[in-house]
Image 1 (cartoon, rainbow, N blue to C red):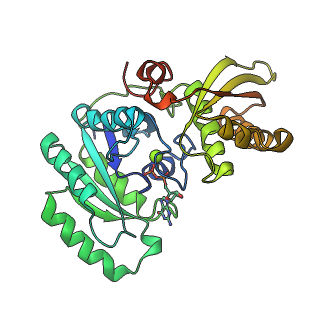
Image 2: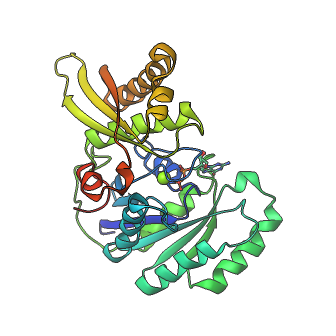
Image 3: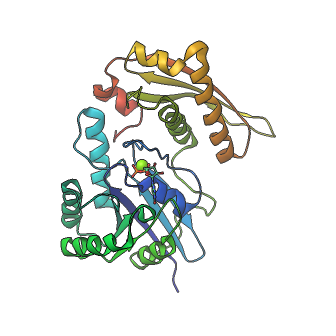
Length: 298
Ligand code: GDP
Ligand code: MG
């Protein structure tokens, strides 16, 4: 059997489990996940290589109606991938009572692109099986999906079938990346995303999505020395800065400790992480600044 290689974009509404799915398929924590929507800000690639195939998954920010410039760039980035891929994984949420209008809009984009698409109904660990039949029927009336597969990305349920189904849709081709690469996103970007994930995790709803992380310095460790990372956290308001810092810097300490642990695991070496917090008002509507930060396309 000839080797197959292809690009597969994973699209769906925010919070349906796209990043969790890619992490489970590739088996490493690359894409950040969070219980709050819109955690993934720019498209991120994760690569799964086996003897027989190489699949480059594109994790997108989730398509929704944007409220500011950052949102617009995020949604556009997700839409654009549809033209560039060999196949599409569309994810919807089993816990929604019905297929939402936002889902229908995404399916319209898939129709326009006309790409072979596998539909996943995710989070089946949360719902009764009877409800799934109805959802499968609704989906199959919307578009000729190659397959409609109920899964739980979190519990690793049904994912073998997803891989089989996706591989069928890929063209024959040689490997594009060395087998050991699990992402073509730089460690800098991943480190920034991990830090942002921890901010979201610890500050709960007090700090909205108004934070950006810039990696100021990234010096790789060699010969058992640790990697040095300096990063600046940008936020919208002084009040957010004080929340992120916490009393006597305790919150920032917690964010730093957890981020250091995760980045260290991924790098397989010790990480020395220093964090600063700066206020940059209205940064989410400053396109120049956003592009500089790697959101959207240059
Ligand atoms: P994304 O915005 O589509 O990338 O969604 P994430 O992957 O960040 O996941 C959003 C939330 O849904 C997180 O809290 C995940 O833990 C949760 N989640 C993802 N997949 C599943 C699943 O199969 N079952 C359950 N119960 N929760 C899930
Ligand atoms: Mg995501």
